[in-house]
Image (cartoon, rainbow, N blue to C red; front, side, top):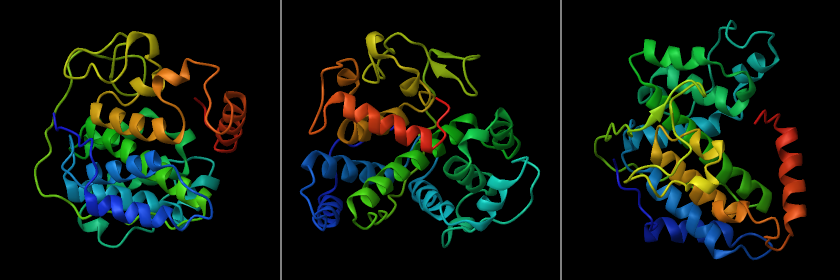
Amino acid sequence: MNQTSNQPKPDILAKVRADLDTCEVPVRDDIAQAHATFLTRLAQPGTWWTGAERVALAAEARAAVHCDFCSERKAALSAYTLQGTHTTAAGSAQILPEIAIDAVHRIIRDATRIIPRLIEMFEQAGLTDGHYVEALGIAVSIRSLDQVCRGLGVAPHTLPSPVPGKPSHYRPQGLKTGESFVPMLGKSTPAPPNDDLWTTKNSANVYRAMSLVPDAVRDLTLLASAQYLTPDQLLDLNCGRTLNRAQIETVAARVSAINECFY
């Protein structure tokens, strides 16, 4: 298993802070720290993808927002019959397999119609379900960062330069099948070295969903803790920030409805 960095690189943190400092209102430092730490991790070799591939996956998540073919497919009756060419980020087609680009675009633009066939397509291309989960984690994380920047009225953060090295190909023990499209760890606290992912009392499926790639869960927790609530705070209905908990959940529910979140 790759050891995820819990500290951002100083140059990345400085750039993130410079971005957020252009906001008309002060932005909490823990948000800057979380964004910079994720970007530091993004550049590093992951579990199934290299650093260069991980950065390219993030770039594709951004390209998908403006992809004309994704718009056509979104409007199509069947999401898996329409043929076309994606609008891609510069250079990503030379770095990523075509199925990875397609999957990231589906995740960003048409997530409600993802079915197990997409994971089967990964396997047919010689990739694994772990490749899919890691790509999913990167796509939703960079989209999360970009939407926060959009809401604050600041420019999206610059993607980092990749760090050389090989993926770990780590697959955790204790995976269970049959509950979702991909294997997940069980509801109890995972065995070391993954016992930091959740405890039995807060083993929500939203955390378990990407536990085939534990570092993807760590990224989710990192960002959610700064931008929303920590796992422990989720269980405290009296917990709030500037907004109280009822206001936070009203905003969250509205955003989820607009995004057609089936979860």
